[in-house]
Image (tube, rainbow, N blue to C red; front, side):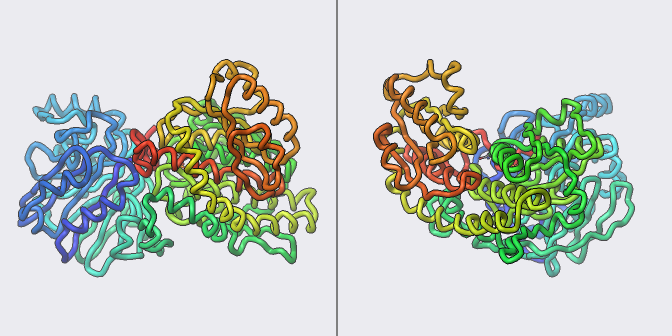
Length: 608
Ligand code: AGP
């Protein structure tokens, strides 16, 4: 998704703007640009491609200003070229704007403005917005922005400046996140905290329908109706080094190997082993009513949806609560039934995924309690749910989710124990599970130590263009997640499914030498999985198995085996996915793919 960085203060803006964009690269983009205000003159530079292409066209003119905007664009309307790149300016050249989101009624607005004689240069919805602001401009930038946004339908996070009001930036949000970094004599508006953390840890989070004006000597927050509001200043949770590579070749590698620490952070303070109690402070305000939940609907997208599928098994197994998992994009449009006693759990690493946010709003519209399982503190979804549990796994920079997935599954396990203890789980049973949970980080370490051996297998199969991933029970969501990891970073077609489902069609795909990954750890359906493995081998498939340490039987049926430490069945998803993350990572690197920024993908899909 697009990245926004805007600065006003006493320092030269250019290095702050460019460095900020680099910290937002992981959001995915295909063009970049800056607008600098200098002596009431506007200087624009923008380019398709990477930020390095933009840096190549910066000069003394852009280097001088202390007030500016910058943007990385992920194309939604109009090709990723120089004309469509942001910032966009109005016809008079007085006003520049950067935008993240979609103006849904831009065609009608464009027609209206063209009838007023306005000429457009780009194919973007964003240019319509800056021309509309200019159309309303009568010497007060905030007022012009307010009036323009009242005509707009859609989503936006914008930052705007004007040559007639130097050293001032106006920003507003509806649906696309914006924060304000509070410095000493300087202020930074940005899409997320990664772009400001180098300068300040004090931030405010704008909510939908809010505006902020920043100057070098202060800031003012209001609603779109110009009602002053006081926003809470919060502390950025993570440190700068957490968003650096830390000696790894890629963020994805760093995040795979830091999963044991991330999981420990996620568990910290939440396991009261003596009382056999799970402590989830974020649910305290709804704790009493959660004892009477009769049904759970989990909604999410992508990897978060796979975590939700594990959650379905966990809530039904450990808490005996009927649970279903819905794609957020489907749930939001199907007029869902949310009867008394039904709650929704939304899962989102970024806390900004448009479909997941809309699904949460739909459930609340139906009067249901909505709980969030979110990583990004202060994100929109986190702030719009009734209660929730943060992952606390630190910022996830790699587009392919790894440690956030482990965090999501861990939080869902904690929630299932939390609900289960309020129903039928005894103190002893709950304590046993918590002790087993505490042992998972070390088990993950033992698996990541096998990275080189897994790389060898990846090297053998990196050229195969079709893979299957199969598992049963708790291992079925792991099969789906393993397949997604491979396809989204190596561009190999991979399909996950329940192992038994293969016979109902997909078995026709099995050809000589086709890699088929089985998650075949010791569990209640182990024998059945062995039968499925034999069905694949009989047709020439090459089996790569995830097996429980000590299970040498499986070597008889598999060309390659990745061993994982044993764990209780409900906790196996936390360990069984690790070799599949590494398999996908190595296959992608060996295929020369851009692991952290895969083609066409964005870290947070804030458009529908
Ligand atoms: C996972 O590897 C993908 N990057 C993608 O499926 C992601 O999980 C999905 O877009 C949901 O994102 P969220 O968790 O930030 O809502």
